[in-house]
Length: 358
Figure (cartoon, rainbow, N blue to C red):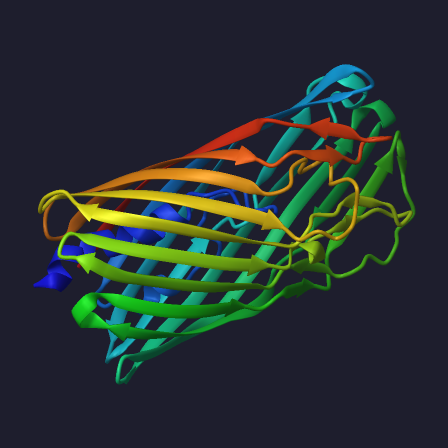
């Protein structure tokens, strides 16, 4: 009986947790490569569309300087089914998305675009006594373009596709809907990345690039029922974004993000047999590497997010989900010449989705 009460809430808390800004380049809201959906029983198909919007403003040389993050959208698709007692599934989405252009001051027109895709084939197995294990193969690729019109400079990157893995375990107590899980995503080295730099009409000499790395991450999640109509959840993630860096032909750093951690705390309420509400808060904290400045392509340190979500059950097979998050970015000094302070900036994300059980 309690399982039926919380079935829709449980699936929705994963969607809401993916509605936050991370501390690194994962601007897509894709759920941060979280494959714990494979732990749930039953055949299902889900699709979620999230759109992120943000703008950052600061000062440089006594004048305003700002960039516009063009809205970026990610479609996350997950499907799973029971195959002779083993849950198998597939997940695909865009873990890294950036579309940023400076719109004034000395760096007008400069910016970057990053697109990506990660597809994972995963499985889980019930070991008994509340224990489950899960994991699978990940296929990752991304493309990036960095441009500085004032210098007539462009940098383009295409990593191709490389593989890594995800591995995790969970402990469950169904009577109180408790689940504690841990997941590790390996780093993925793109050893055959193709990079091109152009300055004016000159293509800079070919060079042997460093391996491009999709960073490793660790995800820990906990949830439990507090009452017949309320469930609490907590998620924590650490990502080694410092390895997700782009270096030009002359050895200069073009994009050098900091590693960091973020966590989400929330509660889900069952309003009635059809509707559930979720309230949450999240914090993201960059690892202090001692640098006085941060990348101009991510001019903030840390994030603070509030989340509101709802789900509606149309029938026993179909659920609709939506969430909205508002993020405040931590103040920082961007590495533009002698430094450009960025303060009091915000961003938002809207997600909608549906899940079909079959």
